[in-house]
Length: 328
Ligand SMILES: Nc1ncnc2c1ncn2[C@@H]1O[C@H](COP(=O)(O)OP(=O)(O)OP(=O)(O)O)[C@@H](O)[C@H]1O
Ligand SMILES: [Mg+2]
Image: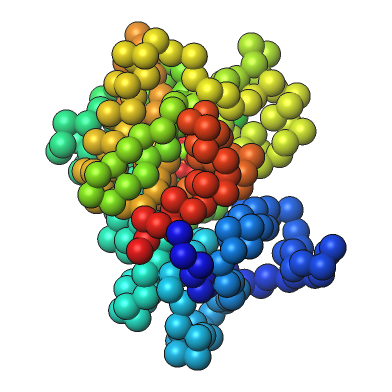
């Protein structure tokens, strides 16, 4: 592939330092940026880096001064607000610059769990039954059985999910819904708690979608809870203490292809392009349900998306190159 001028776009503030003659970003939370930057360098592209905080002017100036062939879009928030993620993608669209990952519309749809579940329902794609309690509305129960899982309808990264998010009766449900309304200021989704195995499927493509080998999240028998809380997601020591890890899923080929088809169907229904990760969980009888679809998922080389590529024999740099190619 020819060498491209790539603009690596992310959210600020972003600090960098020189290390062994190359630029590295400072902070554990910047591992994705460092991994992607390293890959783009090894691939021989010419790279500019831009971190946006609360103005689009630097982006307009950068595009005018040194038009990129492609923007590698790692931006997850603007003005410190994740809800603005699709708006920046819209701006890139208006600038006419190719950018990696999902379109603004796809990001908007997938970010809103209630809206995306309506679309999945309409397409007949299994997602757990659910009830939405808008901010300020009192919980009035749900027409499925306890235990239930209570979560914010517009968050990601397991934000707002704790041990007590699995509720066993009406008072616990009402308390958790009210707590999320008050502390997170968000609408709240309630679903039956699915007791089966948990999987992720990486999907790539624009018109033609391809699903990569299925990954499974395994919870130790002695784990505090058998689901991803916010702490479990972000605290590696806590994960290790609970024997929570991801691995290539050990599934019969026919079951694996069923999950891959489900993931492709979900991405197609939501109009996603570029790359996405579909989170799936089974009920106690082994029936799979789409929990959510993540547009532009984590590309940290230790995360599931890149590991799914490894299972196909693709090195992390190959995965980054594929994502760039899909944007052109
Ligand atoms: N209905 C459910 N039954 C059982 N566990 C659930 C259910 N919904 C969510 N979970 C657990 O909570 C975790 C986070 O849920 P979900 O993926 O919907 O939210 P998120 O905050 O967008 O997550 P991510 O970290 O993937 O961005 C899941 O990985 C799963 O372990
Ligand atoms: Mg998820």
